[in-house]
View 1 (cartoon, rainbow, N blue to C red):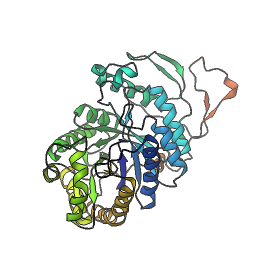
View 2 (cartoon, rainbow, N blue to C red):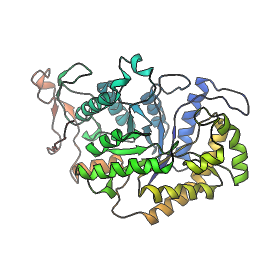
View 3 (cartoon, rainbow, N blue to C red):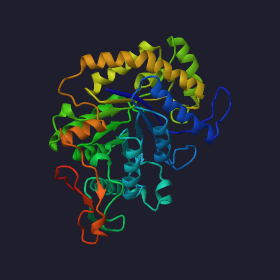
View 4 (cartoon, rainbow, N blue to C red):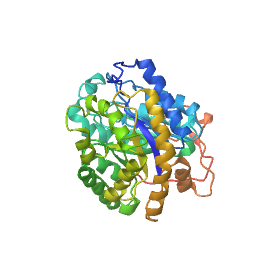
Length: 395
């Protein structure tokens, strides 16, 4: 099981101090949060993508590249990358470059985005969000697996004899999660390609996510990628931890009450009862998180939202100390003991390389200067490892 934290990159007023951090302060803070995630022994840090205030993460590859240079083993991801308003050619190039810089410690979570004004800012129509997501990912999938791509679709200009550079590290694309809050279409897309499915698991009751995850498992098996138990699932979650329940609820209550995403609605206690939100002692957070497996079955990645609602950096860092020091070690042990041996292992670059090549050396792409411009559609790369091929379906 991989454990980590994710940030939606919000800039929110602290209701206790009355202060709103600047963009510069939040950017510096999220770098420190990522570094702390590694320091306390967790595995993954993920950052969202937004192009509108009050958020700051409009360039996640730039941010993650910097974090990669200041960490050693942390897997870096997005939560999410917008497959609708980003050109898939740019996604292919930017994340392959990031994959090289991070030495394989990178994957990404794709999503459609639901902020209507963002679509026209990038020349798109939100009413075309679903077909746009399907078409763009089909192209991205091919760009990472074919040296030369001829392609034509509805939403961008055609490609003829195109090679996305750099090629993925070891000729193995970054692992892709498809993130969803409420729609089965994204679960279907993830299952079709045999990719991971990340259920947001924050704002809705567990019954909602049970239906989505069950549907993804069934379709994963239907498309021949393995059994339902081998489907690759990630979950979100929210937690606020203190040494005892009373302190946790007292400290977090003003942040909950004023949070833009769920404040001014149900009480904190009602929200804790209805959703995955955990506010309490380390043991209470452990107990609540263990119910996720009871509801959804074995899964591969658990991420917690810790820096939202205006919480100051010092509080978030303390939360990470408690999460990494007192909660995660117990969860690792308990979930490992309960895990079905047939369940899939968490995705890593090393595992993907081993699955593709076995004992053979990975292919290391080198442009063939003797072939000149690639006007014939032939591969511009020399083969430096045994030839490997696979058939990938198209939507």
